[in-house]
Length: 471
Image 1 (tube, one colour):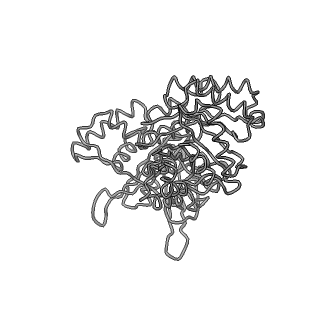
Image 2 (cartoon, one colour):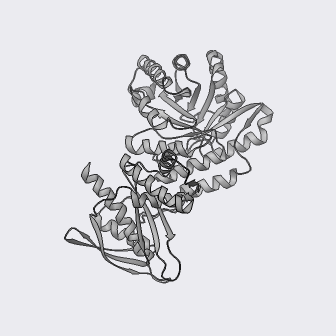
Image 3 (cartoon, rainbow, N blue to C red):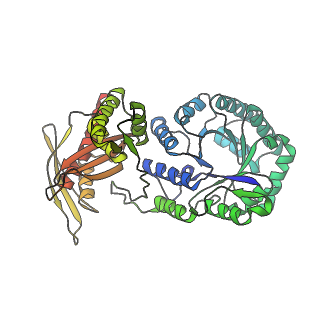
């Protein structure tokens, strides 16, 4: 029985007019959920901002344990190496060569003539094969291409070494029987396809995407691109359930964990569609914390790998400081969890002279009035003030800081931890901010948890300002 691979393309949909957007951390959480569901492939969007997107790819590659992680490569020299440098630590990496093959898209999207496109496909696939054994050729808008050119493009890609060829019905103009006939025809005219895996991608313009995908599978396709949320594509949950219920009738089965699919898809839907306040620095996303533990016997390589999993990119000097601090705590506690390691990084790495210092704060909060915060912050000899309301006292305080500095940073994480016990217990907070794809962690300690939170935010902010001014 053929095992049909499902390739999730949800992260490729963000920023394309779809009604959801994902933060840096939310994309990592989405990848973890898809990996838990045992989808075969997780596709990421192409590298646009080298620093930010490379860090995201590295973080997802470290988080995904079994699925293939696929990233597109541009049709230009050097792109394959750039992508590979970000992807190479993935357990199962895949490079994708995406090329439009219809006359309209070749002309208007790639500005290439057919001969130049064939040359670009050959050169890019050849370069990808130098780095990765698993290379996919994605024929964009294949159903509207000229048959002879499509055949040439596919043969060129296979000769150059691809392991997967995917045909896209980008416009969604085909009915199921037409699409199956298209797949049958390409198998007939390009017998070399029997040596590789064949995938399909179907638009849902006619509300036929799921049916077209099933018809393609019946005709021999063994990989389907789908999304885990409602978009203009094949739906992951639908194709998985069809394969589970009827796949045996055409000698096919899926690998998705059907016992968990409803729950995980519901989590993903909340992750993508939970309403987030445009003003709040917080997000209300689903989080899979995935707590793990280090011990005093772990060496510096293991500790720094765990630090990288948390999203940090430390210098050699800060790496040494973090490991020294880890050893001191691990000897006493024997075990150090991910949240404790976060606090170690916050207190040990990139300690800088403070640009912003907290002078005073006034917080108003109750169960009948909207929370507000009035902060006075010193920058050198200048006093800066901000007044904001928010969904809670900490939310209001963070918004007041943003008002003062005139900038917004993505809040990657916010943790509250108890340091001592009793009524006068000290509380510690860890705030992680994202700037230009890099995570900066700050720590604050106080008997007032709001005060600790403000100090932690300023601690992280000062690290960002210091690095920006000294690059």
